[in-house]
Length: 357
Picture (spheres, rainbow, N blue to C red):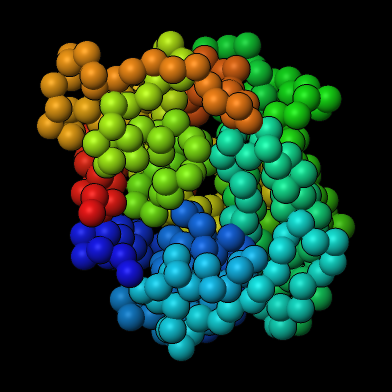
């Protein structure tokens, strides 16, 4: 069972999301499928949907269908809401070649994906299939429902590839991805997922919405996540020195989970169908070394102590990014009225507080 701090902070995050001035009534009484429901972002999506009626944001409760590979594990990750009467469970592996029997659904929020570079080298097939055949499967499931309303595809900043530029990335700033490299399993499959969505909209008239999150963090991260910010967080939580596996110069824009998920719903409810939107916090830009120092300081350690940060070579299976700076232009999303409100100091402070045992 989650600790009291985690439950409180996560509830505060969900409360902040549902208080955003969005057209939530469009979801009232709907049946919504969430893929990857047991994951970090999927869990936020599920909890937000379940909270809307109690918060008075919709007139009728939303029935959520949580799609997970393992129901027992999914229930463990969503223990605080697992027995909610408005939550149904659906066991399905998005690697599978087939279409799940979802029953009638109105919306799909497709967040099921392996996002960690730790999986790119060890399980490239399991990384790419949920974004490719899995996307096609749930698009088909929604299309055959009697009253489909819309589809949200959680894509990734990885679709931009190597742009060769240090300036902020607008949604049209595409670079190169080598399709004959193992690491391309994630970026190329996210690109294909976006194309599938747009093609489905064009051919079948199904409204699709595409969001491209950058580096999103917050309560709910798992110790085996594998991304650098998660590794740093758990180094701190477990009292270890932060392990740096690079020179720390790469720069990233870190966005707190409640801001990112609010961005997802902003695009779903107010965005232009078929148009991708960056979801990130450019004001949260830090180098990897700066992030390490921030976490050391938030933990109350001596930031200049020799044992606060140590350098080690990358472990086998981890395929690192080649992008030195990955920071987006979020003007398109801001034009819908969205903005990030939590900076890295506050956000990582909340994350450490929530996950500390």
